[in-house]
Image 1 (tube, helix red, strand yellow):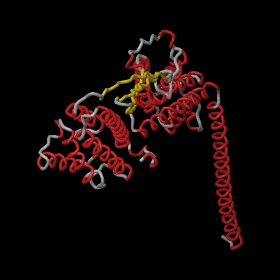
Image 2 (cartoon, one colour):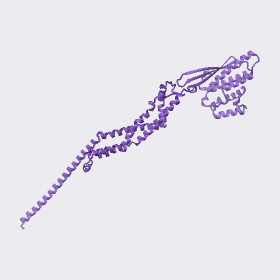
Image 3 (tube, helix red, strand yellow):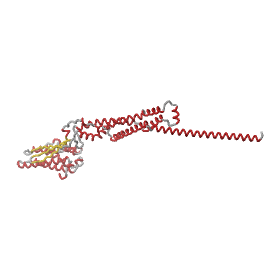
Image 4 (tube, one colour):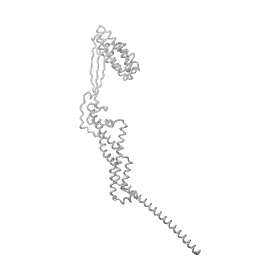
Length: 434
């Protein structure tokens, strides 16, 4: 082969090789462009499918379950807030509702039954009947609340609900080309898939619990309004007894008038339902004139014990250890039984010991009686008692002199009674009275 022919052959082969390389590059470029176009197309298709799925999720049929769930969540929040309030109160649900409703319920009952209640107090036949009715309503309210708490706790979380909604939405509407292609080979129509998805949502535990709670709330709210809705027309209040109807207090005032001790007893009755007040006064007269010294001694002893009893009153006024020590000394040192004092002389021996060694010692007195007023009142009480003792021991045969001493005796007994009251209530005494 000539050199010229060999050169031409090499050049031709080189051209073919270059052409082959160029063809390969162009083919790969076209493949890359086609792949990019296909990828872009799938992305666009996926976006379109996602948009359609979102539009489906916003349809009325798909929004209804969400509205139902949100209502159920609000109801559960209301129930849980009330349960937290009950737990914070430290009371049972029944007691919590009873205490909350009692003031208004009682006031409404009194108003509709034509009663007036003084100071919020209603007793007699009215109070137990009204309390019984409210207790029954409170028990029913507590039971309905217990059921409501169970319903609220069964409601699924919002995250669980949204996950269920998203899953079933994708069942109805594909969100990717792959899912869309797969459904092309399915026997279900789009309408059938949507129906199946909607039914799955409605029948899901999340929606069933939400529907159940929403349906229950009507009865629950009615039960929470039982006290306000109560009809008192059929409630018949029995007539209370006199003891139930009235609150009683009694005061006594004793004065010496001539040879007589006149005890004025005032009994005050207050109608518990209306506050209306009634007073009744009676007089008890003790005639001392004409009595012998022995009879006067008995009268004065009984009277003094009525004013200040060294068994009952001293026990109330002294601390436990001090009272025990006092009674031991009366029994062992004075040889007197404080429960059976029969002479005025014995009474005054016990009074002297009490006044000098107990009534003026704040370490021995209970707090209510540990003050200067109590000590001063006991000093006056003792001085009046001493004067009475002297009068009884020195009665003359002369009638005119006796009458003067009778009058003086009744005056001292009246004063003794007055200061006995001060001993019972030392914190209400004015210093000028001592």
